[in-house]
Image 1 (tube, helix red, strand yellow):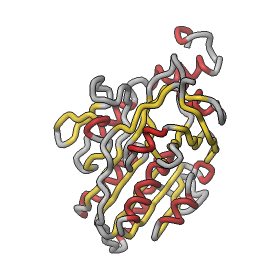
Image 2 (cartoon, helix red, strand yellow):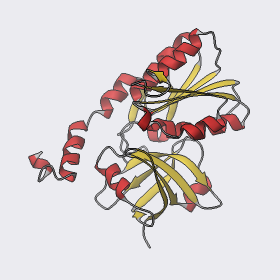
Image 3 (cartoon, one colour):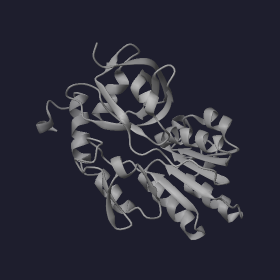
Image 4 (spheres, one colour):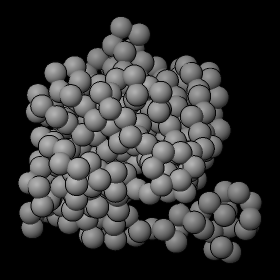
Length: 283
């Protein structure tokens, strides 16, 4: 039987789903920081999702995604027992996990999900971990209880102030540093704008800061060049050179611009998918 079976489906927040799927070979090889690329069906695009959890004994992997474009909307409609056409992985380089001392993990939006395995791994090797997670509103905040259970300190922010600090995760981090807190390492994952701001907050302090980047990606093997970014003035491919890079060296302006490359086409495709227009040509 073709495809990868969905074993468990959960809704973490509106339009944010968590799937547990059967993928024994990936589960055996997976490491923190790596990702997979999947296609929902024959006509579906290839897109990456970070590995959130994996169980080699059970042969399962866990994925979290937000329904934004056509492909993630199609994925979100699948139910337990349904099959995803194909999944390739694990891809990307495993994260460097070591004892820093006082480590901070900053996750925003659906990026809170990939923050979870990093917190768990940093804690396992003896770090004291301060977690800062945020969302636009409390209804979109995910994995709060799970992250609280494995963190030494947890700070929550929401853009609208519906829970925790009113404002951005970067402001929480800046506030802690202004209080005189000393941190040895910062990891950030989420919207590119957030990661850029976190990097600017830590730059004056010289704190080692790593960002997990999220450009448009197609093949995941370094051949297509879609995920190229600039780091220290050099071209890198996120899929094979990353996905994690020194946040102080990333050209975030370029990353953000490239993320918008197909925005118009993506919006048009969603309108067609939802039946609001007859075809892409009519959109």
